[in-house]
Length: 361
Image (cartoon, rainbow, N blue to C red; front, side, top):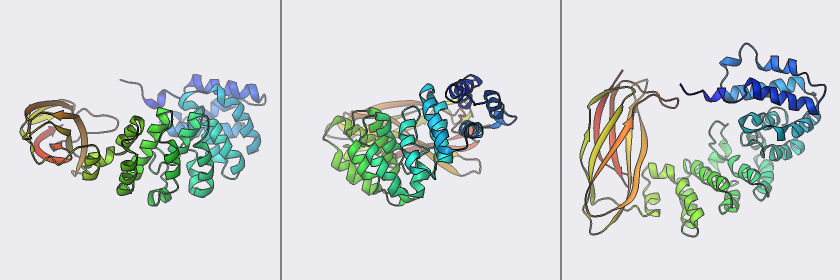
């Protein structure tokens, strides 16, 4: 069985190293007390982010209670930490720094060089979005790519694992200047953050994002990739304007025939093979975005659609056989339930064929 994500970080070794590094800059630090507080009787029950917050609180309990003093100590410790374990530093600012903006915002920019401050900036954005965004506009032009990425990632309206930003869901106008600055950034991770931010915005303001993407598209390969990634939700939803932007025209003359499943019923945990013929009744090559959707039965019996991409390609006129294997094994992100599921084939966002199968316990 693969190791759980929560057991990869905040291990006895890494927390001990954090304690040692803290003791080097703060001789009064009690490592024994800190370790006992961290690995208490409830430690094993905590998930990853709960463990991060718990370690943060244990640091607070064993560091000076004066926030400016504790913050300066943590800034000396942070460069010795790596990976997700270093998230405790921006998390400390999130928990205890909301009354110290002039110290906390520069500290988040510093800490993000070791572990992203994308979660920790969000309470500041919620408390005073315009004041926080003034810092983020400056970060968008910082020489450090991790700080520039924070400018985009931190203000994503729907950042996974993070508190949402309702104000930015309703009106993302404060975000857009940052995305304009960073759309041609030299760092791929920064450009990808721009794409993810636009994708978030597209879920509430699809036409706004399409306006931006149509204006950006066709000028540079890197920006074109941002646009394509930003439109992924719109493409999966079959948005016609998004389809046309990338050359996926009306598939009236493309059909799907002979969709067949290798089994009509299969147990949870096994794979299904399905095959179909794509028939292009066209005068020349046609650009096709080929997807399939699985309509999963949920615990309460309702259906939930998940779209998967098969391929994007130019297809010559005539018949093309397509085959795909799909796993119905349980995952941490998806649990399967018995019942009648269905599979549909989509061509350029239009459903062309479907078939059903029975998933059994």
